[in-house]
Image (cartoon, rainbow, N blue to C red; front, side, top):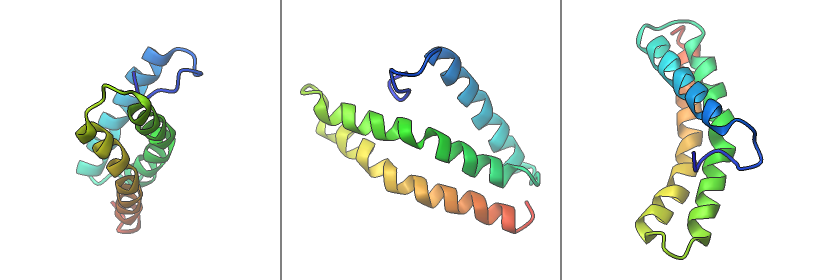
Length: 94
């Protein structure tokens, strides 16, 4: 829930839906489904704003562990690597 921006409605439904989408994308990648690479990249792009919000909120909260803050910011550039990898899977016909 902390990754979903507070301005969005039905936050728990968003978390549930994104979890289902992640499982579906993972299964698609494992079975080399044609749609899985593009769907995975789309999902990663969609959840990126939530990761930014989480990094900002973690930085602002005084009681947050410095390790968590570093991890929250460190995951942002990794998202680009994961998007690239998902698109590469698509190009290989998986």
